[in-house]
Picture 1: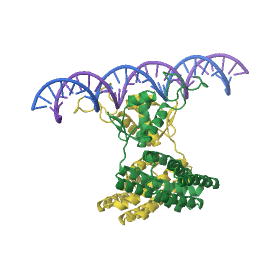
Picture 2: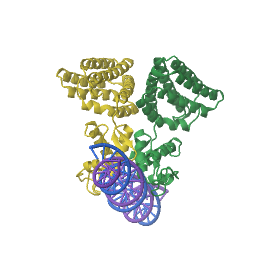
Picture 3: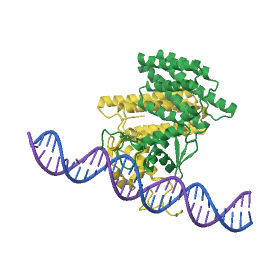
Picture 4: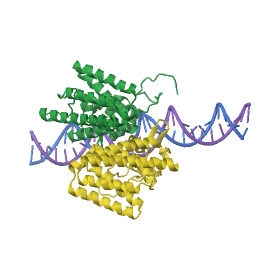
Length: 241
Length: 241
DNA sequence: CTCCCTAAAATTGTATGCAAAAATTATGAA
DNA sequence: TTCATAATTTTTGCATACAATTTTAGGGAG
């Protein structure tokens, strides 16, 4: 076992050469998540094991194991004897997911206010103003990235690992819609205001208020997305946070 | 492929005989869940694949796939090159889980009140009075079973599948503690009162109130368990709902 | 007795093979 | 041309084999 040797190919290596410490099924799961989120594997699409194995350069066993992981996360649906299919959540599933994420972020807001430190509030503030700067410049993609980061950081501030993990997984289910359509639904101004309110509540360590704003914020995001869907016949996925 | 023939052994069959429609990895995952919940596989215990395969009568491949499912649910922890270990949540993990379940049940309560029908309220009422009867008789095990059923039914009444699924998975993480210690922590009377309040709020379709009671109920359950833990040096798991 | 080292045994991660099921293509009849 | 059926190909689920890693057991030294 060569300890210091460079790993020539982390995700795929010929025969039985040196292996990285991380199991292949985890690598495969990560790769597949990316492929799903970035649309390389489309909603409803059948995932053909051998094709993906060829692409990723690994055998079917770790890939099948990775599929079980992704199925547990709700990103793929396993159909016995037919293989896996990229899940294609309809409006109801997406709405359900938003509702649950709203409740989780509400709880995160409460817990965060009980334990947040000044430097952590400052960190959120920096993210917030970076996001606002992108807003003034009309840079939606960067705005969006910072926006996501703020939500994630708020949940992390809860200090509740089960909450962080659950939020991460559920977030993964709707990440595809967010990524695929970086387009404003006409809600950008309202979202900015809501984020202002979030920052104020956090700075004041007003847990109840922050929870309320977060839940409302998620509800409004869903409502706006549903409206865009209805008005434009577009798939529910055009979101502005 | 014999269509009508009886399946001689659903979970295990010799060679490549007829097979049931349900994949083996799912059967294996169910069996393992039971083994973990019922203590046959103890917290912290290493799960030796071949031993379990011998016991369940199947090969390692579906078992490994089942392990990935259980790891995603948090019931086992995968350690590269060392295999899987039954997860052993400490007091912090358990508390975190209760917190999140409380938020989920709170949301379920709100959603349920928006859509519940009279016959569904009647169903909960039946469960409630059955539970109360067991309470008067001091039959903790039966009381406990009905109690769980009420919580599950309330979440189902939300009509939110993501919520139902998330609640089910998180519930599975602490089910072991509940099952392992059917013992009152001195909270039985209080729990009964809280359940009365739940039923009243549901019957009145007072979503806010029901959410409040449910969250408080989960908090009180956790607090009581923590107190028992501290007072008696017992593991956090002695719960009365 | 304890600790360390070595060898053997056990276990794990992955690749491959095989049977069954599903999907696709080809053929024949109306 | 369309439709149904048969044949062929592809894909999936699972078992098994093999290499790598970890664990266990035994012996020797202090």
